Length: 205
Image (cartoon, rainbow, N blue to C red; front, side, top):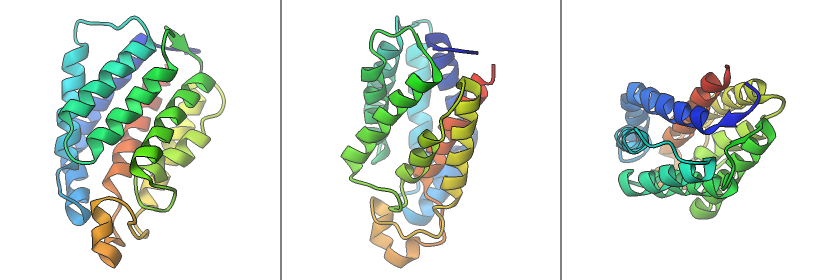
């Protein structure tokens, strides 16, 4: 697969919904240790709403598609994740406006635009024990063709999500726990890794 099209993007979102469905309890368990315990349930509800919205309606371009995803997540995902993931996809959509497809380099730039929105909204940086810790190295690793770039991103994201365990949380609910946040993986970093893993699966072609 050389280009990422609207059809592929929809396949990715549906695969993401399935993966979050399977991992919802695990994500909520991670969140229960350092947050409200509802991250999995919130993400599951949001992505189910996305799939419902996309059923039978194929947007004209990547911009329209990701705008729909962002708006849906904003209105259905509770907690801090709603604005962060909603904003992420809205920013991706802005960069994909008018594009029916894009190559790996353009997709990486679109996703980096989404990450920039997360950083702006959440004021988080690398080492704060958030989804930024998984997304930053993942998007930096996106090199080569679509299959290679997304596989590299998925691997980097998963490694980085696992590596959030020894970190002290400095942002979000987990930061209220101080030292007690150490020893637990960040749920947001894990859901971000899950999204990039399903992207890699979709782009294997």
